[in-house]
Length: 336
Image 1 (cartoon, rainbow, N blue to C red):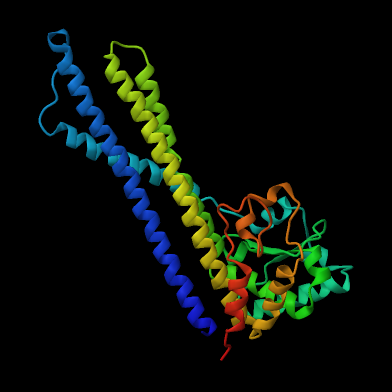
Image 2 (cartoon, rainbow, N blue to C red):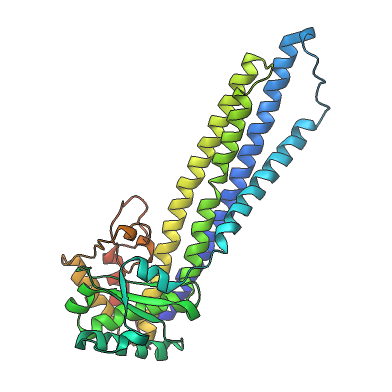
């Protein structure tokens, strides 16, 4: 498989995963609508059990289905609004790099560079030409001995590229070029913007917890209410919270799957920009051989998905493909 075929495959699989997000949103909204519908049925049964002691007007025929539609629609709309709130949050790459302790080499920082830093800056200029992108702001994470790198910024105009001090010291020029080219692949493919939007989709499902909290307060709030109805409402709140937990859980799984496909896409883009797959493959082999990729900054866990290699944190929702698979694909990559 050549790098163009790998790029097409990763893009197709990403589109499929995003469609699954939409289906998950629809399922969450339908589940809440079904719980409201069930709650109304239980309420009518409680009202009937009270007999003449109630002065509540029975619901007209079809009202429960109307309630299902309203509840599902409002839930889906609420999830979308929360998603869009996060969706359009702009992210400046330089600020992200600085939050991780990055020292800028571009601009005023280009004076008094070490030979390794000058080589790194030259590689960035080469990759900017190869990718037809503007030169991003360039950072080095001085206090990080592990081998790692990342790109940040939602647009090429506000992008930043950073590598760790360990990468500068332990990688050869070809290996460092492969690593930098991989990060340019993320910028060229707008992966950072996609990552922000996918994370926003997962965050949107947390709206269900607000719905569950409101339902809970209605259930335990003051007012004359049949005990069975009160229990049913509390059970409904717990069920909505469970739906929220499940959607966030599966959303995180899909988020990790999208991220893994974009890593494959960036690997293929690195081959396109360098025309030399062995550079990036050799860097991967160093990690497989025992070199550390850990980033010690407290902010690394939140940014784990953005790093070239796993920077730490739990493995349950791993955003990086296995090194063996990445090496295998690079070993079979053709540049013609």
